[in-house]
Image 1 (cartoon, rainbow, N blue to C red):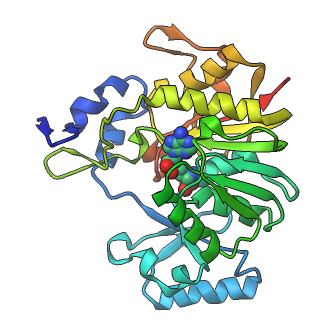
Image 2: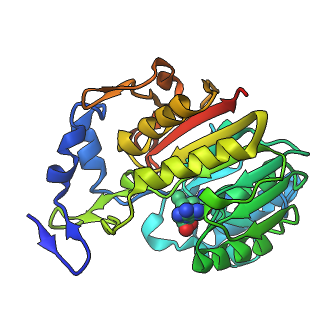
Image 3: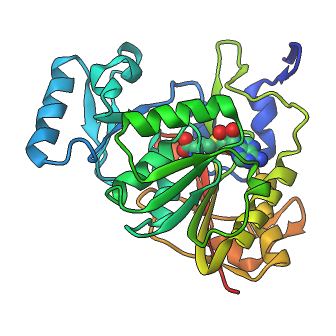
Length: 319
Ligand SMILES: C[S@@+](CC[C@H](N)C(=O)[O-])C[C@H]1O[C@@H](n2cnc3c(N)ncnc32)[C@H](O)[C@@H]1O
């Protein structure tokens, strides 16, 4: 069942995902998971609520306001909302005050892979609306320097608002196309959370139509993604760490982009300890072989982690 509106073709989910039938583990489970709403998560913002007793007080207040939640054991300060349909986290006073921030659980993974530390000079190349910028500021206790960049002015507004609301003082914002971000700043860590088709977010409507599907648009996403990753490599100090992430399943936006970097520059893929279950990255797709070390990249599927599907690659600049 295909319907067209002005800019995009709406796909039926079975028709759309069939190309991944042999890629996605427990494919039938994956398809059924798309019919349920995406779980909501929030994290405590320890930049504003740093004492244990204040965190407990905050959690009790949220309970009293009707938020039913459970702690995510694997990732500190994250909680999963259990009464999803009744609660809009963004309407809570605790949200407006920056005591909590809502973000999908898997959004923490690129930050965990990058492992930001106080004193790091970090470029967040595609930062808006700032979920990962905020988490990086939190785990470094606001003691790194984060350049949070995005090319879209409307999304930069949201990024600036989030930085302010969360009480972050270690971040500055810039507006460049990542591919043209100026040289001269000795970054030692860069996050490229690239624009993508967002297949890891897709859900299914009543007629089997894919919801949250992005317009096909004119953008050649793999070409943009390659440009962003190559620039990140050229900007970072030798020995520096780049994390490339997307919320899509498509290997042409994931492994193929990292494989392209390995062919063009002296880089290596690093392993890292993942708190959530993953599958190793692909070393071949549609007959095209990728570098064997691509198996060190990580794929996360929505039905296995109960959050947005993700791809994460941790890369080191050798030279
Ligand atoms: C996946 S979203 C980033 C989400 C963000 N990292 C977070 O955690 O909240 C991708 C972002 O890339 C931005 N973007 C798209 N093309 C870009 C480019 N060429 N240079 C820089 N940013 C770009 C989009 O405006 C969008 O905000």
